[in-house]
Length: 198
Image 1 (cartoon, rainbow, N blue to C red):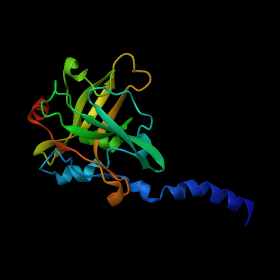
Image 2 (spheres, one colour):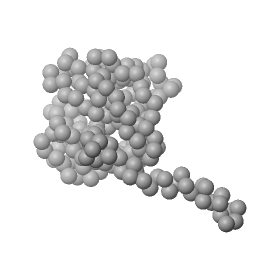
Image 3 (tube, helix red, strand yellow):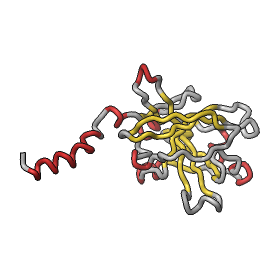
Image 4 (tube, rainbow, N blue to C red):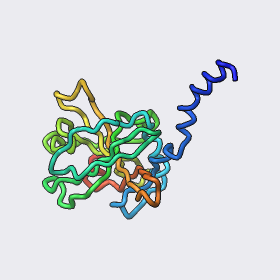
């Protein structure tokens, strides 16, 4: 084998490694909190992110809403998956969510989502202290809005390190049945979110 062929082979090994099963560890599904599934949104959710946008370093979390953190590999890189619950002071349902964080959405994803404005006092009560949250939604064929996650925007102390990021809802599969697959999902937006968009 020639030295130049060996160099090419060595350069391709990491690329070929990306073709492993880990490439599909994040897939699109609807959120388990929603009974009605929008197939249009489900088809488009995987266009919201690229693996290189995933945040790999865990962020500080709000103590009373953080339940745990698990790591799932995406392209051989461990990605934190946050298991959070809504605080009772904001929602009596205290729904639980698994979330992956991305520093940005894809350009195509940005054209498909809408950010819902929330007053700063409420938005400041955040899973990630120092960041204000706003729900992000996608249209389901113009019939209703499907909630797919949140945008977190930095307050003054975090604006230079990470000005904003997105938390997308995921569902983790059991290790024995699905090789640690994380599915991106969403659910039908509650009335208060939908009415804020009109």
